[in-house]
Length: 359
Image (cartoon, rainbow, N blue to C red; front, side):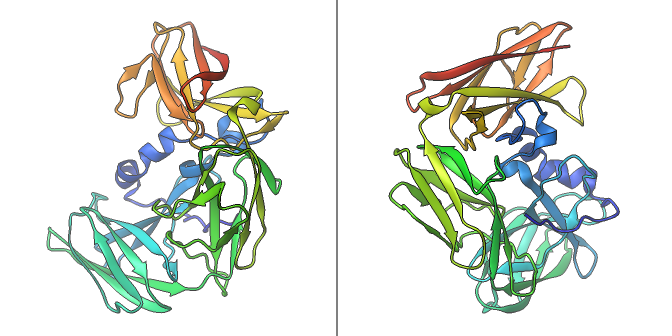
């Protein structure tokens, strides 16, 4: 799947804006790992919101910065923003965040307006972000005014969708395993007739071969992934684009069909003494794109290591989605031992594995 070209220079806003809007996403969702069971998380790819990076564009007056999410697979290289993509696909919605360009502080929005409501309509306005609806083809200027009396504009362009590029997050094959009764995310890139890559959510240019056992979650505001809900039956379901693009087959299996868990430890690149730990499910040696199925992680050595919750509280046990990782904090020298468990719909343990790391 293609990704926008990275900037050659880091934004002056980087150290302020990125942690505010995207740090939590990257830190707590590096899961659904693909590939070699012995490889590390950072080397073998990730799924869902973990592939989400941010674009940056400067307003026409130079006062405000504008940002939106895109899929980006290589999280191990330069972490500068991607170039702002002004294209949005017709019939979809887009979410944009705003900061003050000089210091990167989130802007407090007072008003957002459009130069052409027949092209771009303002759908919702929040404290530091706004949503738009792409009504029809063309270009429109979006004007944002803040409580500091600063106003700026950025142009958005509504375009068509000629093709889609999407792949299983845990396999390079056109078929992959997924769990029944689970929320599933599939990374997607849309391409228009001119080769541009418009963003947008709320539009679904795909056919589902069995809608009784796989449904599109149309209420998820995610421009980088397709969100689906699998049903209770273990069967194959195929997604076929209504425009140009490859088809994907999802082989739905029950949790009881999972026969392995491989675990992966990756150090936090921004803080010493912290580790991301992910559990990858397998069947017959092949990874399972597990989605939001419930898993539980417990430290067996709380004097050596603890689990860090999203609120930064230290815990001995946490329940997470199967496509996420848990953040582990070193507390003392020794061997950190964790118990990783896959749960069924009723919270019963289906499969478990112990993993350890010597500090």
